[in-house]
Image 1 (cartoon, helix red, strand yellow):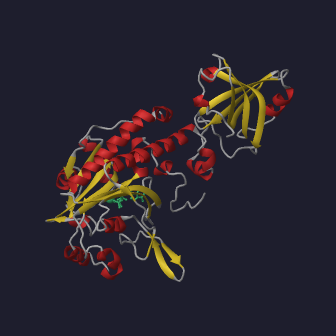
Image 2 (cartoon, protein in one colour):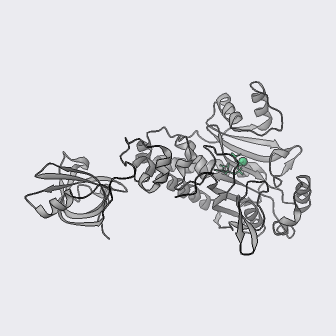
Image 3 (cartoon, protein in one colour):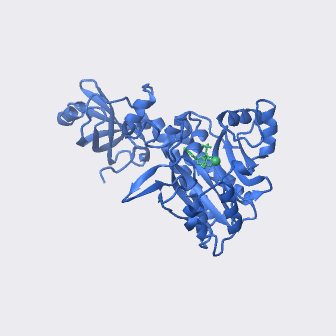
Length: 429
Ligand code: ATP
Ligand code: MG
């Protein structure tokens, strides 16, 4: 390898020894006879101290570098309490791998103010900034620990198709693509496939899924390409079994993030916490009662951004479930219970971060619901086949990864939580 240590791996055991470090040149201070070069790697920063009369060649090479060039340097790691980290590298050999052009399209150091579009246009440079990198380190932890929880609880990771012959959830929010001589669609979610898998005997599955949705509006909480933790489990009693997994998964992952990502949370300079389990459950009927005191809201109406915000203010809970929605407010596959659906949303700081339900497992009931919704049953023949030869009771959820992170880290725009966001205007980089 071109490095022996990340800068955070160097401690007193390494002082006095030869090491090789590598990274990006963040700053060069040339004082004439001595120069200080700050190198940044994934874990932090370190200083190279170059003394001209000891090695003029290295001194000249280091001081003529441009910022953000990529280098490695080997030499002695010298203890120095006056220097950041308490040590500096006295270079004996340096290697320049790539010289950065000047000027840079945007600054790296956090104090530099650049607008969001410039940041996204230069996302690779943007990602070199501590605050931006921290979000993706926490994203990495969230996915890792949430799936660790699911695996510990017997869930199997699966990968279902993203190209499909029919829209998965109906509606207009679908991207049509050309598939050889036919039309095809990008899936809006793995919903139909994960349900079909319940008939396979795999029993409990999860997927880190891509959602492709031609959302009508450009908002700070919608992406046209987003990711989710989707799960489906068989032999449930009712939707409560699914909700328990949703809340326990959240709690498990957040506790781990608090343990493992304290450095990143500090960099983001934000309050990260999570109420203890269980999360409150509020019925849709209770929601209606609360909203009707404030605004014009009819039983059966969908909860939009304004309603969700208002509700969060009135309830004074950070995170809670809304359950027992009107049947017609939920998709055809939600299990009916009178005029209600056995469906829930998980709300976090005033936005929906996950939706789930017990699903219909009886073929005849499913056909009836599809007819009531005016759906074209022929388009769903493969899905329906899974219900004709033995389908257990089941349920699951779709849990938006970017939505969760934006709320956990108190970020204003969902685009902060995905590397290369896709929205109505943005198809690059
Ligand atoms: P909303 O009504 O908030 O647009 P939805 O009810 O259409 O969301 P679901 O179909 O329930 O979304 O999807 C499950 C989860 O996936 C949502 O709770 C959300 O966290 C996430 N999600 C859905 N659509 C998007 C999107 N366009 N961008 C980002 N996340 C999304
Ligand atoms: Mg939903």
